[in-house]
Amino acid sequence: MTKQQIDYDRIAEIYDLYVTADYDVPFFLEETAKVQGAVLELTSGTGRLSLPLIETGVQLTCVDGSQGMLDILSSKLQERGLNADIVCADISQLQLQGTFELAILPFQSFLEIVGESHQRQALASIYACLTPGGRLICPIHNPPIRRSQVDGSLRLVGQFPTPDGSLVVSGFEQGGHPVVNRLQFFEFFGHDGQLLSKQLLPMKFELIDKDRFEFMAQESGFRILNLYGNYDRSPFDDHQSPVMIWILGKSDSS
Ligand SMILES: C[S@@+](CC[C@H](N)C(=O)[O-])C[C@H]1O[C@@H](n2cnc3c(N)ncnc32)[C@H](O)[C@@H]1O
Image 1 (cartoon, rainbow, N blue to C red):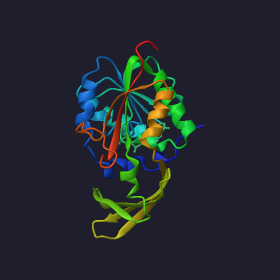
Image 2: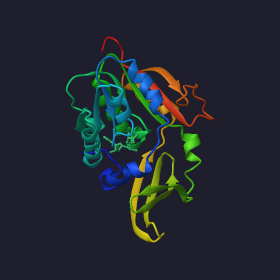
Image 3: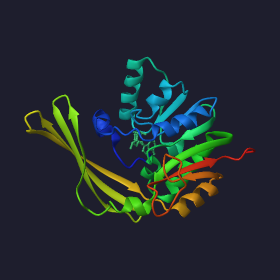
Image 4: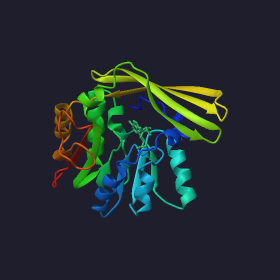
């Protein structure tokens, strides 16, 4: 049974219009440059991060549970004459060829696995894909900071250009202890400002406390190698850091 909470197939065609972030790219370029062999990117989606990595020569295996998102990634690779192994799978049930020195799980996507038993299953599944001494890099939200936006208020994500005019994305969130229920709205407008169509995406993710993530990671066999509070590698600060960037290591002997 799939562990995916959000139906990305429904918005795969429009994802790249409104997800344009690149703040984590230099960090992952540095981390992947330390690795000789293939790198495993979990929840690659349409390749927001995959493409810059592959373009600099990283040999990437891209895993995602949404075939729609992976179809977009495949066509972008084909257009650019680039190659990567692409696997449609749930990250809690990975059955991949070979093992990897580095796995990355960017963009807080681990939090889209809801429920501790599923989260533990995912960590165990990823652990099994690593070589002895291999690493997992897993950024997740810092709950107290992220929770301040979970207040039921409608917030604008932004207005983005489309061939026909613009796309306005907004959403509101409720809950947060620990599961956040988000309703995201997509409104397409013509060049004349007329509303053309609307789309709705229910989303669900979980805020995982630092101690609970650390405990689950250790129980899965990982050692905590480092914990950054942001992509500039500043140390994690409970009260201020937007994210917890976990660098986890598999022991040399397992
Ligand atoms: C917010 S998107 C991030 C995509 C991409 N990493 C990026 O930075 O744009 C989250 C992605 O995680 C994938 N995903 C969520 N849960 C998953 C699971 N259990 N197994 C595999 N993929 C999953 C979704 O299909 C989606 O493509």
